[in-house]
Image (cartoon, rainbow over all chains, first blue to last red; front, side):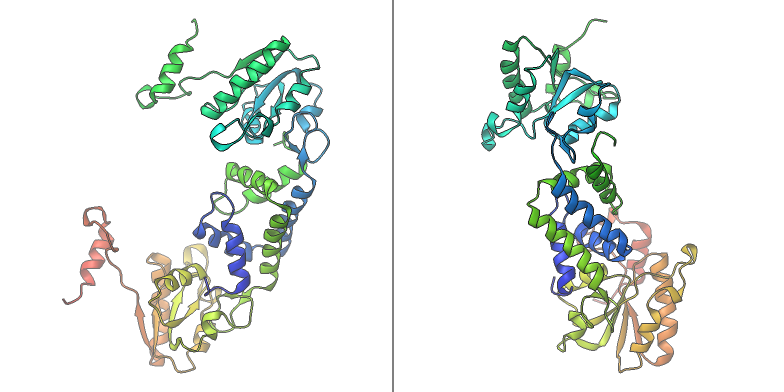
Length: 198
Length: 198
């Protein structure tokens, strides 16, 4: 990109390192940024640096927060005896958007993956075990429905059950609005296995 | 997004204002940034602020540059008597990547669009006219092949021809590798109109 001057080339290169942003998107973003009002560029730049500097794990559930406790763990109207275990903060956000969950969360920041060399000690599992020393009624495992998520779910179940705490897993099945003929066989089979009385 | 703490919500909101970045991508980017090494976040942030502060129009061709002249206008091995007019710096980049163009450019930063209220005075046309006071052999109009690009091309042609400078327009036709049955009628018609002797 020697046809761009140094600073533009640098900006495009830095942007193209972000996930899901190829060279063309990086160029588009770079020129958009050059056209933004200076205060807005400063705002975006500060938001990044300040979030990176101040955001850490919630002392309770390990999600990202800029305070000691995240807004959900601070909320005393939530049911703190019901813990949903998710792989990352985006999954927490997805469940929050349903507006139907009243409990709290625990964010693992990953899933067990022997193939990728990620073991139980590499995710926030010991923090979960500490939380279970308080009164907890149920742990709902909402890790992804794939090999890593299932392995993690089984591992958690084996750890938690001996403590006398109920462990459940979110249901597998045909998604809402799903047209059966387009659904893969594993999902169809799981939906059959998990059938519920009407 | 009251389930995220303030600084994360702020970062996600700022990122989602960028073009082509929806709420989900903004979340993904935000969490990626939180996981980046601190120096890398600082690097990206500085690249944005510094590019915004230092980048301006090239004194000659009006593309973005952080010096008085862009690398292409500074390059004395390019043919400065041949000027390709493009709508924006990304189009310049696209032609540079062909590696086949030896002339210089002129970046309009837009196209004439009566519908959007963009007139000839809103794009960098007067700067082009100033350049034509020096010796120029040909102006190649490479604006987009749509209503705005064609309107701009016609306008430029009417301005430039009276100066005795040759004006040309990049060809319309079937793209390389194009399968005729999937090409729209306007393109097929233009390809026929613009047929060349073999």
